[in-house]
Image (cartoon, rainbow, N blue to C red; front, top):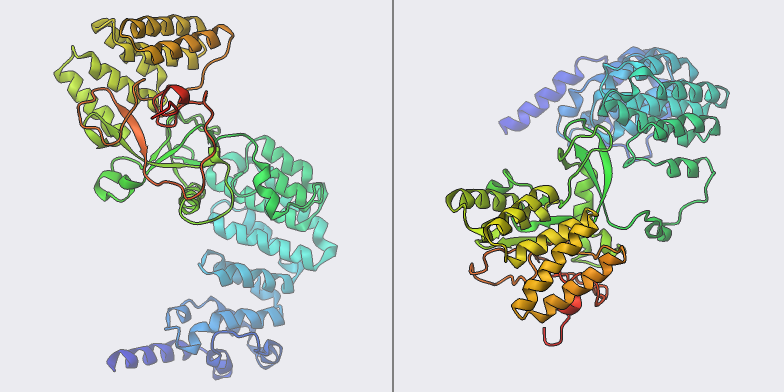
Length: 511
């Protein structure tokens, strides 16, 4: 009961700031669409200043939702939309920083009603870099609303927004890029093709966040391309591979990257302590920011998180078709010591090598993890170290052969595969000797054989194996997909990650 009394007293305290004539504003509940704002505006025409104050008074929004007065600022904006007072243009910019869908929906309508007289206020706000990005974007939205409602000033607003795209600070930060991107989207809504060259220039100069809007999107807005049907969206994939948007931690930009494979350690994601140290997202390549050139400095932004969620759902429920090579693979990882994270495995190998520097198997295992992570040069050094300790280490030679091929050193790759072939023949490993012979023939024709990205050694990896396997590092599928997998060609890399062709690994009869 005392709590209720406090709420009532708080409501009365806020309402008592205003003239009694504004009482109708405080009696309305959440707008239902049947409120006669035109009639209400007639009642309050002599209280414009007070209605503006109500719209700006956030104390109302702190009241319980059950209190009708808590909705007063929203109703005040609707009244201002009817009254369209020019004196509201400047103070209402104070709402640009507030949260809530109603801000982005109602304010453009109010400024549209105020009309061209509000343009100078909105222009100054948009061009002032000290305002936060979201607030400046709302200012642009309001300009567009005026341009759409008042055709006589549309060209003026289009030119204003075009000038904004070429402002000196346009490429200074991720925030400026975000604002530029939304202004481009606003120009698309205005549909004036005279803005196209400036928009294309912004894309050409990489001043736009492509995850938000693409040049193709704008060309469709300008009717330079045919409308895109939802069922055709999947056909627009540009390049094969996993398309993933990452945010650079150095410059803050979000950019789409295309990778051969991306893994997600779903088990690690549920381990809070370990996930604070290691990211569950594992990209077995060097990641370079196309904007600033930073190497391996990235995190998942909102768009990247959406991709992971979508791929996870696609493996559990029926959903839109996704090309098999554009799917993130949800895995768990193991090495000789059991389940692990690749970076954790690197640390373990470093400690073990410090303890046993003459064990070639440790260098092979270390090299396999590095190779999996895309650190080919570092991996090659480890394989060479293993060979110095044991010139007959067939796994080390296999690793060297694969790296040389991937890096385009065909002569070196052929020599390494010949060594593998010789060692396999001596050990009577006929399948491996035959496979090495095939790889040599392909390399002599200038064709680099594909290798599975898991990059374990030539012997198959078994998820339930004990720690007896010394040099293993490979992922295991954690979440089997509900849909049928695409057919694996006999000459394709075996999906187990062995690095061997499918026909010589799990594609053999009886495997």
